[in-house]
Image (cartoon, rainbow, N blue to C red; front, side, top):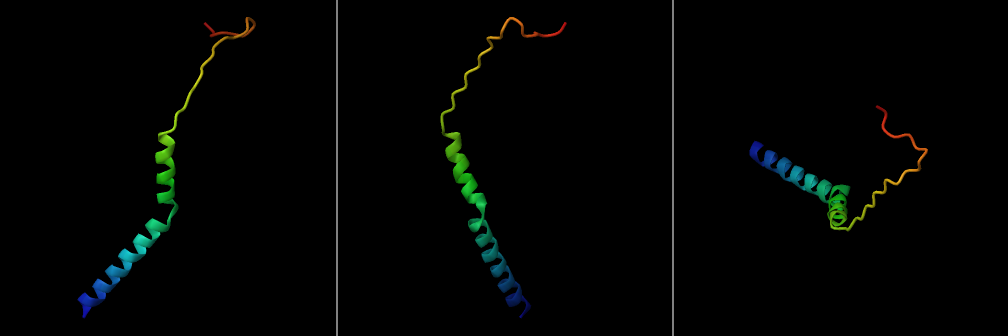
Length: 58
């Protein structure tokens, strides 16, 4: 009798955990970030400073 109750509680727990996992935003976030890493990013660094800009202090 106790084994049947324990098995039923385990089955309900597995179903509830699966429902929480698949229904959560975690899966959506994983899909969005996987596409994000495949995007192309271009960065331009320009260091032309005016003459009156203070440079590194010595």
